[in-house]
Length: 317
Length: 297
Image 1 (cartoon, rainbow over the protein chains, first blue to last red):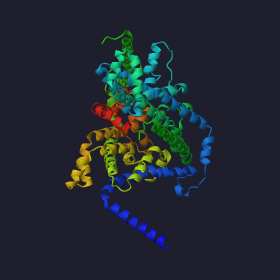
Image 2: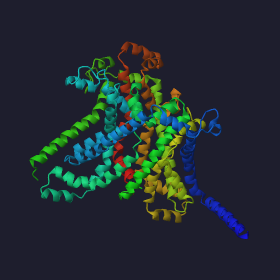
Image 3: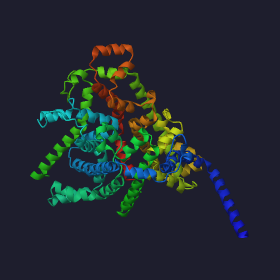
Image 4: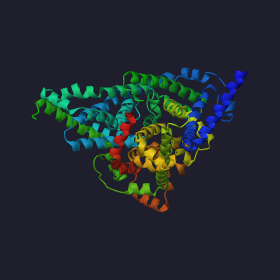
């Protein structure tokens, strides 16, 4: 018994001293505590709120009084007629974006590196970085205008080349949607994403190229034997991390480009689905369940990707 | 050095491809600008590509006379300035505190922050939280939830740690408090990183259209991006005419040349101009910023 009391006393002593120690350093605690409270409020409260996916949440009863229903909403989601469609769209769009959008900036960086004229290189860089800074609303405005049947530039071009007779309604027909989405994404981000690779290329020892050209290697040969292997570590890390983002098929771009409800069948992905059933149809618990399903898989993918990145010896953090 | 035929061919193809790429990157923007300067009914005849055929400023006149668009522009500016200043200040302060080794709870705080980079409650719980907090239909919904960016905090922290310890120590000996050191030594030495992160934060605020679209229904509080999205989405041209003062409406009746398309293009240009204005000045910073962000050690 005395031992236990002693232990308890020690505990209070320690706790007190901890409190005192914290109070003593109030100045630096005051720097971090307000910020951390904001993080707790805007990140951790919603994390706790995720539990409502196991409830029949109603606005009137509130979080505390809504009845618990277990996995009902998850079951409903998995059995929903649109479930497989949404999953297919998420994976296909995401993989298409990965397959095209990932190599594109690497290619651009390699091409820019081969440009001798400094002015031309800078010009192309400046132009290609710009779209990254435009909002998706503006970009979707460009796309809608370019693809318009009413004298949109793309239709005009195709017509003047006699490839088509009547203008195509690109943003209405489902079969064009994925290509439009991927192209737009590449258009917006190719330049900006190439910065990292250009920086990696800039770090390559120029003597390697001199030696290679003395040995008679052609320019193309030099790209594949020197440049690409040299930036491989960066490529590996970024490709691993891209896999961690596999379920992030996009959100703004899809919402803005698939304004036509007829496209839903090819455009609805997990994130837009959550938005539509949750915010627009107010099915809060159901939408949260769908969102949690996505978040859990994403965490697993990200953790796996980070683990793999660390294993490859190129950890990012 | 003499180039082989193969190399010359390669260089030629490379330049051509890059030229095509640069053209493709610029053309949608250029074309939209041209349409915004072209007479609307003339645009409907088609064939507008590189140059306005019937040059006019009417489209812009309509945009600038529409009180709602001007208000949206002002809201966007306010939101961007306020949101960026508050966020950079708050995040930098948090980051500086986190560099202090003697800060009790530092590890726990850090883990708390890092978890949020991997997992979030998602859209619906956040939406309901905003509702509970009474932030719906408030200007502050565009500022307060974004004050702390964990990502920026980590970049700031990495940068601050890189500042030589000796500077802080000597200031301490001279009797500076921790807050004094932060404002008088750390911040003045952090120009580049502040510029870079401010740029990214400002661009985020300027471009964000989604949060206002779900949290704000009061039209007077909507930033220009959200209004633009609504214009693009639905032809609210008629409504717009009603919202103009009568003089402008009279003029519009004479013109009849402003179409939804030309109007939306003009609005798009107006919403892009601030970005185009700062873009050339900050280019060297953001290249640096991307590198600290992605290859941080």
